[in-house]
Image (cartoon, rainbow, N blue to C red; front, side, top):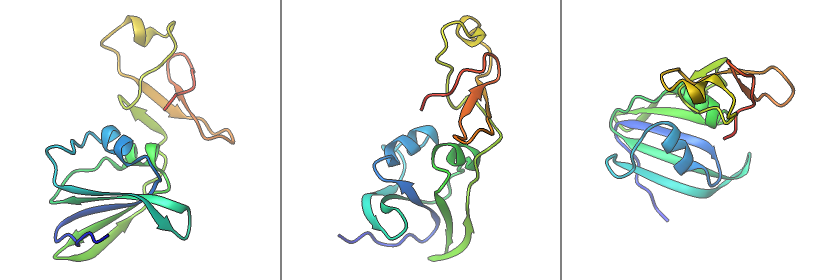
Length: 139
């Protein structure tokens, strides 16, 4: 299989295998209207298998969201056919309006205008918890 290189854009590498479409959904990137290439279940020395997302042209990628859904991913910025920068997203301390609370008693389920805010719990599992009710986030 051959996927040509991109001239200007970004490459999101080391995405967990089988999750590229979910990552695109969280990043609010519509595959139907964006020029991109998805490589799924590619061989990886570090992870065994991985997904790769190549996006042609400039797209604003929210690295906080990417750090939330795929913290092990790397982002390569491509300009003029060469990688000009490499970014490693980190798990953000807070995410807002990325996920929704599943607790039926949470105030966010009864008050539709409230922002869905979650914070990173510094437990060994590194999970996110609702700022309002402390419910664990479900991906």
